[in-house]
Every structure is written in C-alpha cells, then in structure tokens.
Length: 151
Figure 1 (spheres, rainbow, N blue to C red):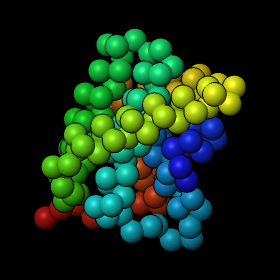
Figure 2: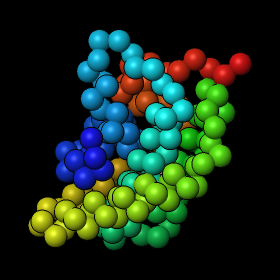
Figure 3: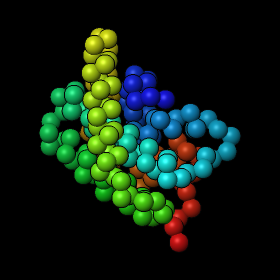
Figure 4: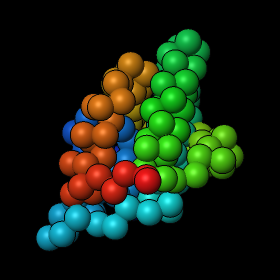
C-alpha cells in the first residue's frame, strides 16, 4: 500500500492501530498467522510515522503539535527498537523520507480535490500524546503479535 492509498483509505489512522500510522502493514492484519516482525517492518513504522507528520504539516497543523508528534513517536519507536532488538540508527533519515512522502501524498490529493486532512490531523493529535504501551498494543493488533523481546 502506498502512502497515497494510506491517506485516502484511513480516516482517521487510529482505526488501524490506535493512531500509529502503520497502515502500510494493514494487509498483514488479515493473515491467518502473525507476520514476522523484522528490521524492515520496524523501519516502515518509522517511515509511516514521518509520513503522518509531513502530511499533517501540509494540512496546516500547528508547529508545536507537529514537533510534539515527532518527539513522542521518536521516543516511543526508539524504545520499541531497543526492547525488541531493532536498530534505530537510521531513524532520522527514515523519518524525514517519510515526511517528504507524506507531504507529496497530501499535495497530490489536493490537486485531485480530495481532502484527507481531517483524518491526518486527528491522527496527529493522538500520536503526539500516545503512551508507549498504547503504541505497542496498536502494533500487535495490526501485525498479529509483538516480536520476541531482545535478549
């Protein structure tokens, strides 16, 4: 699923994972067995979090809210990475790439007279204050299970 599809089909994103914009993984939620959670999937979480942030910026979100979402998701996702043994060393690059994709997706939607801002802005408000355990529950709902903790 592309970011464009993510933004068109999710209103608001919390319907997928209690506000964590991981709808790129939504197809896996229908799998009979939990999907294997690996470094690539972890990096997709970071990227889609950035996409949500960039999209919210295009929608006119207040700068303090955009910054708070970034800071909260950075804290939560890096903690998740440490807990489950994933590397967060590329966090900043992945998040920024996601921001670019999110901005492009919303700009493309606007050119087609599609307004996806209500869901994006609602998601931003949830993401900026989301507690770590709520994020983990959302990930588990979408992927079928959490990965094994790092040893």
